Amino acid sequence: MKISMTLSLISCLIVSNAAKLLSRCEVANILRNEGLDGYDGYSLENWVCLTFYASKFNTTAEHKEEDGSTSYGIFQINSKEWCTNHEKHSKNRCHHICSDFQSTDLSKSIECAKKIVKEKEGLGYWYGWKENCQNSHGLKRWLYRCDE
Ligand SMILES: *[C@@H]1O[C@H](CO)[C@@H](O)[C@H](O)[C@H]1NC(C)=O
Image (tube, rainbow, N blue to C red; front, side):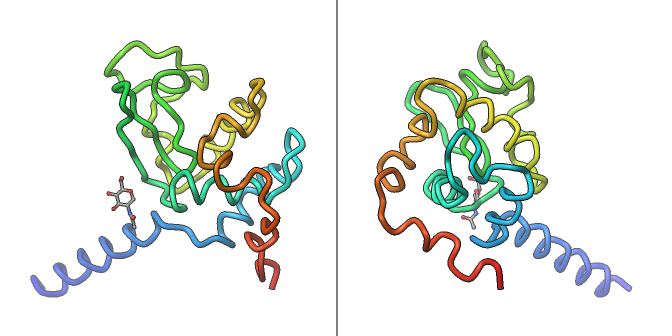
């Protein structure tokens, strides 16, 4: 009895841990279904490339920034401007608790990313996109074999 409970607890931990890291094609499918392909003029490849360089497709990613704010989830949405983590005053422009952006359900993150990209910088808001995805000629590879 004890052993089987321990085993099921362990397998449960493994499953929940595995669910945090999405595959490239899983991300592509989710982002497509949530309407990001072509959103604000950016093709799906751009969005997949962006999330890779932002979070390595890790839905629970969390990084402390130099200014004391923290960035959350697959899009690394920042607490200074877009969500609140109750640490400091935040404009909280997406009206969410930051940890909402660490869910395996990406809908809240995507909804907030759609708001961020409408700012004047567009996807240029994300440093990783600017450095690695903008002007990249190999963007197609982000969708390679995703519709098989
Ligand atoms: C995902 O991010 C969390 C929080 O930063 C980290 O603890 C975890 O190790 C990361 N997972 C992987 C597989 O990189």
